[in-house]
Image 1 (cartoon, helix red, strand yellow):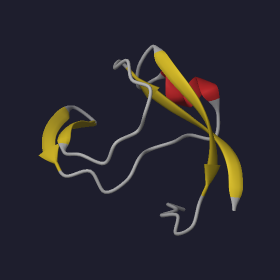
Image 2 (image 1 turned 90 degrees about the horizontal axis):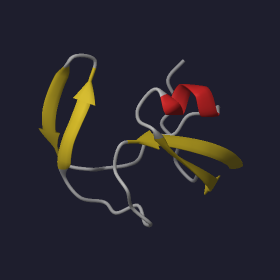
Image 3 (image 1 turned 135 degrees about the vertical axis):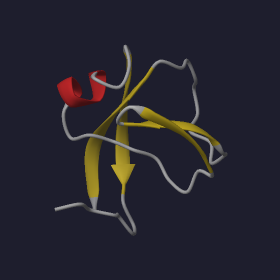
Image 4 (image 1 turned 45 degrees about the vertical axis):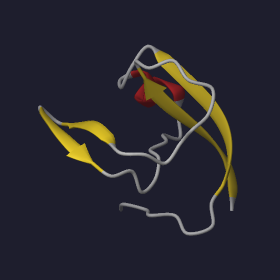
Length: 67
C-alpha cells in the first residue's frame, strides 16, 4: 500500500531512525522504545504536533490502523 503521509514535529532531522525517546501522549510524557513512526493523512493534523511537517511517500507493509 502506497500513500502520502505527514509527520509533525518540533525536531529538525533528515532521516527517520528507529530509536527510543520521549513521546508526548495527551498531557503526559513517556520514555519508550521506537517501534514505528506516526503519520497523518493531512497536513493540518500533523502540524498540531509541531511546526515542522515532513511530507513523506510511504510504502506500508504491516500498517497498524486505528478505527
